[in-house]
Each structure stands twice: as structure tokens, then as C-alpha cells.
Image (cartoon, rainbow, N blue to C red; front, side):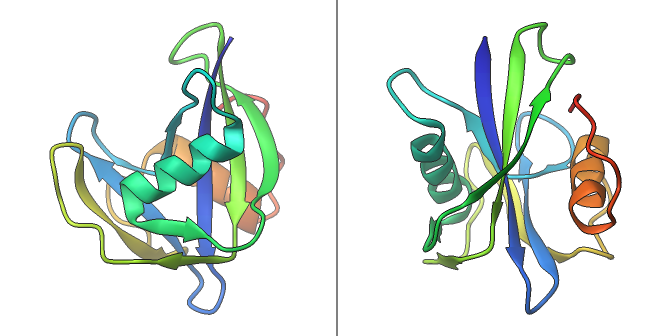
Length: 134
């Protein structure tokens, strides 16, 4: 089994979430990535948020769901965390991996937000049933 992590980084005061647009795949996504050998899921989540958003988790993240990501492989799973307490050390500037990144209002997501990202946000904020599949 392969495991990835994703985070809904939620600024409750502004009712916004952090999204990234990669240089190598279309669409806006929740930040995250693969769990590397020897890492725990939480260490991976902390590393990915730092790399993709200059974000530091300042209180425990909450594991919300585990999904099967059939579009990647029959063995791929994604752990989704809710991060409510964080700080951004600097704006995330574009580079070879990240074309754009930033906070967006939940009810005004950017054009090109992926269907999987939209489904996860609907499950979290619109009381939609949680799917077992990404």
C-alpha cells in the first residue's frame, strides 16, 4: 500500500482554505504528498505543508478521513487532515514544483479546483457524506 497525506488548512476567521497549483499536473489541489520511507504520516504532513506553503502546524492536526485513490493505483490511499492552527512564515513564491499557492474563500474557489478537492471541502463544510474514494 502507498500512503499520501493531504490537508485542509482552514483559516476559520476568513473562511478560507489553502490550495496549491502544481507545475506538473493541472488544477488546484489541497496541499500534501507522499509519505516517504521512515516518515510517519504526521511528519510527512508537516514537511509537505512547509514545502508547499511555508506553513507550520501550531497545534495537533486532526485526522478526518482515509480514502482509496483508485485513479493512482489499486493500492494508493490518502489520509486527510484538518489543520486549524498554523502560521505561514512567508508567502509561497512560485518555483519548479509550485506554480501558485494561496488562501481562497471556501465559497469562491479558483477556476480549475479539482473535483476531488471540491468533494473533500463539501464533505468538510457542507455536511456531505464522506466517500471511501478520493
